[in-house]
Amino acid sequence: MNATLCDNQTFDPVIKRLKETGIPPLQLLAGRRPIPTLKFDTNRVVGRQIKRLRVEANMSQQALAEQCRFFRTYISRIESGQANPTVNVLAQLARGLNAEIADFFME
Image (cartoon, rainbow, N blue to C red; front, side, top):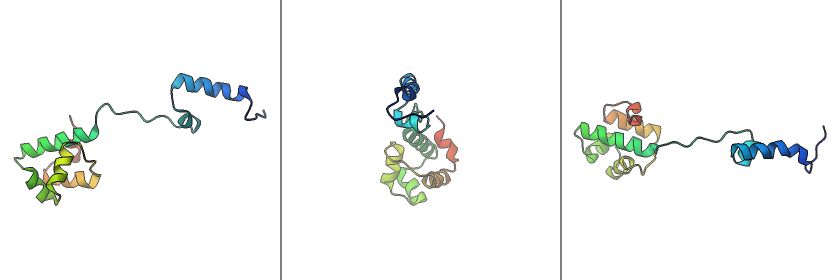
C-alpha cells in the first residue's frame, strides 16, 4: 500500500491509539513506552535511611563526613533529600556506616 503523508486512513489507527493510551505522541511514534513515575521521592528515602543509620551508629554528620571525606554540608543535603548522590558516594557512605547500599532503599 502506497501511503502519503496526507492519507488520513494511514494515521487514523495512530490517532486512535494516542487517544486511548494517553502516551505522548513522540514516545508512541518512536515505539517507546512511558517511564513510570515513582510513588516516592528516592532521594528523600535514601536520605532518611542514611540519617537513621548514622543516628543508630551514634555518629554526628561531621564524624560521618570526615570518615567519608565529604563536607558536612553535603551529608546534610543528602539526608534532607536535596542532593542526588552517585553510586560511588552511596558506596562510601555505606562503608562509613558499616551498612550495605541496599539498606538505604528500605523504608
